[in-house]
Length: 518
Image (cartoon, rainbow, N blue to C red; front, top):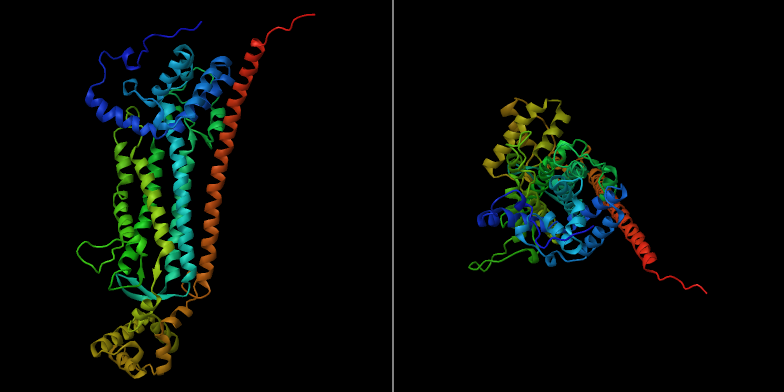
């Protein structure tokens, strides 16, 4: 027997004697609803999977399951903006229930909530939403790695000054520099993949705290929703520390972007002039006609600032929970972090694809630079047998002397080197001028690097190959993760279709008129 109430009883009315205050609605209910509405499709998916499982296990009747599933499919075909919402009815779970009640009655529609709580249902929705958004971020991260690798391959032999403490340290290769960020981004990808593994666990069936007496098949909903496994302890069904881990991984990505953007921003200044953002990623000044401002790089750096506090904010949000107080079961900040990280990865991909590299300026900055001094020291150690520390004193003194006398590196002679050696260690080196000049040549410096991972001619191609392998691995990981989700969605769709098809066949057999007997 079914019945439909004339007045739908709101969830809060059964327990609370007063409706929510307007201030509570404004600052709590409405923001929460807006946040949940962004997860519209995930809400419907969780409801479909839970209903299928209830019907398959005989917890609700096939007829009730079909009625609910039909209405859920109708909701799923709506645009989120078209779904009717009444803030008085409460959270989005209750909004969907209200829609079902209006269509098929509370006695049928209300069965969908059997064996679950808003706690585990909401936690499941949020995990689905976050895992989907994390995959979007990881796709954009791979795109940026592609753009970086393309520039690195173009500049695998482009020599530039290398800096420590913002002072010339040694000659460098621009492609090698870029590949260092490809490696960092791959590390960040792996952090996200590890976090994804803990996000992608099924809390549905944990209910509020201690599980339920209903014989739920949690393995089945895990399959239908594409989770990799269960949240095994029902107490942990509502915890959100997985979100803190994910937001920490996102913060690492933003740190990578900040460092790369900061370098390129500095190197695009007039004083450096080594790189330049394409005009399409720049702005201008309202008063200084000559200016071309690197707006995209500045946008990325500005967005990276708040990311420094993302993890601390997440942990601070959970600081008072202990084992009993879990009012802060969700972390809205992660939604903003996901949007920001995905957007800045996309923006940086455009910057990298169009980056202008001034190779002539990089070469010019090396003229008159003493950044090959460490190589001169290595040559002297090999030729003289002195310790590196003794030779370090000699080379430091010759640099000091030459700077004081305004002698450029290309004019350094063996005699000047001997003078510095006498001043520091009391002996002459007697190196020929040709040996000195060869030791101070930037390209020769690069050519003589032999250690793994260095800027040497044999190593940059190897690093390019390594970056290619890492990018392929990252792309493959995302592809496989998405394929698993597609298979789960297909299984869910087929399970829903089977129930509805069986119902249609049953109803058709009942409605078919009897055949007249001859």
